Length: 81
Image (tube, rainbow, N blue to C red; front, top):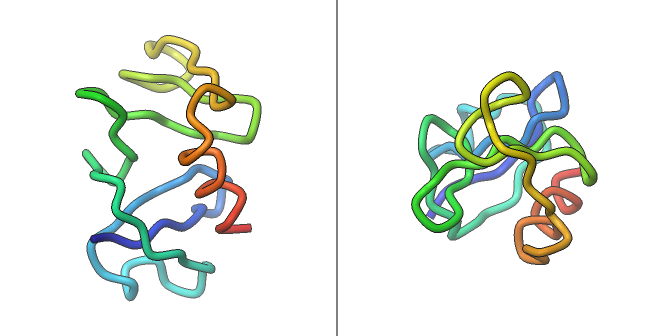
């Protein structure tokens, strides 16, 4: 179990302790994480917005990922505000 929040840049993060998120709104989640990013299948996803996400990396080296294909992850992003 972890806690999801958006960092100051709006990027979705998942941390093991709520205190790590500081003053950010958090939502409890069962998504696994790698380096504080949610994991889908066997790769991490960097979620910048409801319409911009990348799997296996960030804007520079990841592959575009369509959050519409993962309603659970999209709902988590929306839930954290």
